[in-house]
Image 1 (cartoon, helix red, strand yellow):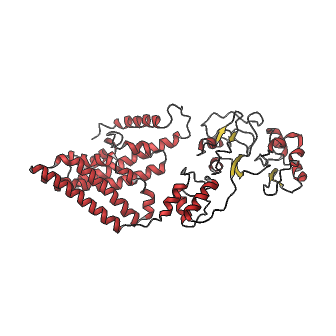
Image 2 (cartoon, one colour):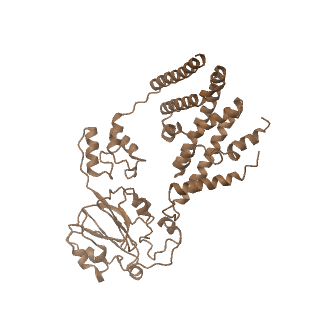
Length: 192
Length: 268
């Protein structure tokens, strides 16, 4: 851990952007970026869940899997924890804050199967982060995710009123756009 | 044997712990949702057109069950959906008359003049930003098909002449076209309305005559001819009151130089 915190955060948000460089979590990237509202809702829900699941999975890995020598069950255990956590969070929000539930509610079940959430939980372990790094990495990867979502939603809202050949309209152009944004971000690869 | 037992035990305990937590949580954080809301949502069309004024069909269903919206709140679904909703709630439905959208402009590409050639984004709202649109008439249909693109039921199509056509069978009167049109050319009217003045121009007659062959001059001859007093001239535009109109046809017989005749149509 020779990196400074500033570079660590910058790397999590931009240089190693989870969506555009690692290409994790592409389902919401293409699915809910057709309108800015839903992109923001999904991003907020993702930041929230990502931090909770990243930290919980890290604790579980260190406390249970490592001590019992069950590292090979990581995938299974993390999926269980994430699925349970999302269900639990959904119930709590519905009871505690109906307004928040209306804003995030429909995105929470989608997050259960979001590759980013699981990817970050695994990356935290693979990169051998300590607790603070896990927490910060989980927060700022999700912030990077949100940034990419907002960029994509902004571009796609413009596309709505553009003349697009029928052949490319919809998902094809979405994929091409995603690739081009990804290439742009590769230009920052040297930093860190 | 050892590692397998540990693995099974650890995963079993994890699964058990999570299910206990979820089970307890579902009791503690239980929120009562009226089962009728789901039932009503099931019979609504599910197009989320927003014609009822709520965010979507599920929002509308909640409002209906809570009594904030009438049983026939869903205009798009029409009488059959109102009946089904009433069935779920155990009340009788009041049959609302079916409505359809009509395009209140007849100034097609041959009849209406254009100030300049617009070559920008293919959307009426964008065209409006370029000195108020390319049509000489500041009330007429721009013909770029924003209403067609936004119709959630595919009831609109763009005609050869540059004016949208309404398919009465598919139109549900949800009002989306009325909302997206920057000039509010489409209007939702009862399907039984026999006569309408299909023009939106409030310009004075002299100007209308110069720029459009299919515009209302506001001369008021139709108003004088109407035996039922169903026609009014509001700011140089004749408006037919559907409630009073009997469809006798005297108004469009009187329309001068045949211009307004083409504005008035008869639905059998």
